[in-house]
Image 1 (tube, rainbow, N blue to C red):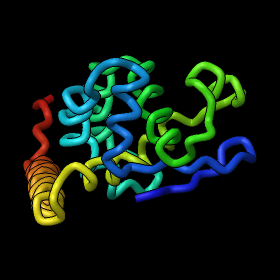
Image 2: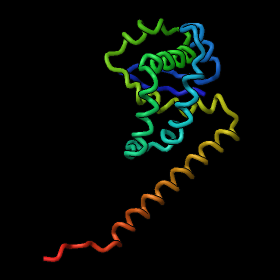
Image 3: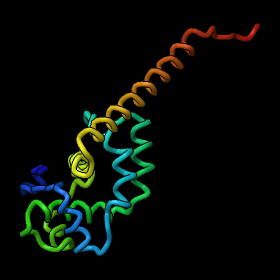
Image 4: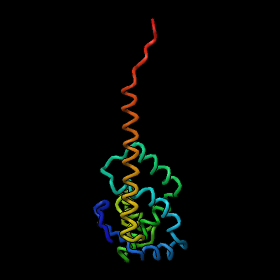
Length: 160
């Protein structure tokens, strides 16, 4: 699957076909899936429903996972996806120097669900996202019930 994003007026094509893994391994000498799998498991259900704002709980989950990974690892993944989409891009440090600002968070949000889809069967991907949606709904119901319970409980005022 390919996504084209405009970054500082430049169109960048990110391809999540599995060949990005070989580009990553060839350039950086290691397999990225050991690092990517736990992140995707947590992040994809949250990111796939992103409407521009994260709840505090979602932000906490993403932050916990993302702090376990070095920024350079994200940059390497993004570069490999871009290289997979356009074999003409230069080496990572040269390519990134073409941008004054690079929205790592936006790129990851766009490509993370597609990376997961490329690594899993459609059936398993749907099952994972459904499971996470149900988990999220249960959490929302639990929080709602807690709020209702707090509203219904009488306030105690001290006797004066």
